[in-house]
Amino acid sequence: MAKDKKDKKKFTKKLLHKYRMVILNEDTFEERFSFRLTRLNVFVAVGLSAIFLVAATTVLIAFTPLREYIPGYSSTELKEEAANLAYKTDSLQNVIRLNDQYLSSIKSALTGEFDLERLDRDSILSQPISDQEYEEINRIKADSLLREEVAQEDKYNILPTATDNINFSLFPPVKGSISEPYSIEDRHYAVDIVVSRNAPVKSVADGRVIFAEWTAETGYVMIIEHSYGLLSAYKHNASLTKSQGDMVRAGEVIATAGSTGELTTGPHLHFELWNEGNPVDPSEYIDFN
Image (tube, rainbow, N blue to C red; front, side, top):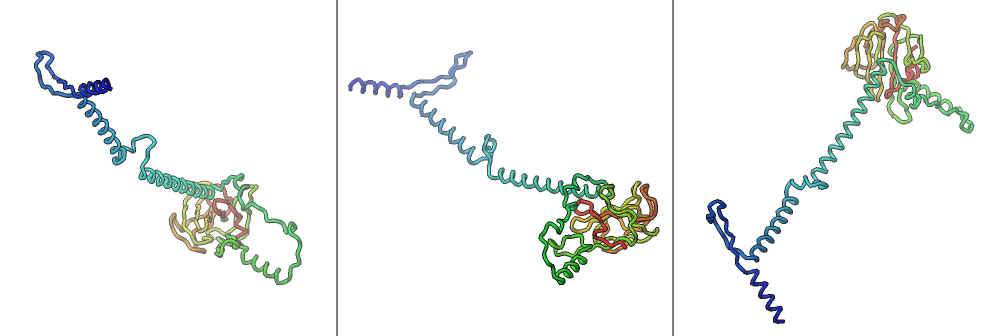
């Protein structure tokens, strides 16, 4: 017991034992300044310094933007900004994709070229199911008359009335006989209608002229953008009465028929109809006679 008290006094005495730290000039050994300290003072100073360093680091991380430079840490603002940028990127990608499809449709309508493999995958080639696949039922006369009436009304409607309540009938661009019909096998995605030279060519529906220029192969060409993803193309014209950007109405004269361009043998209208980037047979929707 006495020894423990003696060791405790000795330890306390060491902690409180005073030391003098002197700073000297190395060349002249002149004393510049000095101060006294004890081991206890040194321990307290080191402890306070460590606490201050930890507290300062915590404040910098918690309340200053420096925390954003710590690997793995991200603020709410950064997360929100990243989410907005991702949303804008996705929107821009969709816009670019739609623009590419739109330009591809215009290019196809202008050049008359189309990927048959793509066409085979589209619904416009899907054949209607034969009536033989259904069980035969007895139809009354009134039902047959109603079916015939609806079929006549929808014969020249480009949009399916089963899903759209809009009657979007097309106006015939010219009247005449078809010299060359629409043919997928021959890659002729149009109908050629024989007309007299300088006969008026009319727009099939309301729309906006997106192309009205001369081309070497098809002469004076006009392409009109209509509603519901519909494009109409008029080629081999003698002249154009509308310019790019003009708005036109259904039945309005947009050109005069002719035989311009390399790929023609006489006055006629080469007419194409494109629905959502896919060529369709114009004779199924327009009566040219």
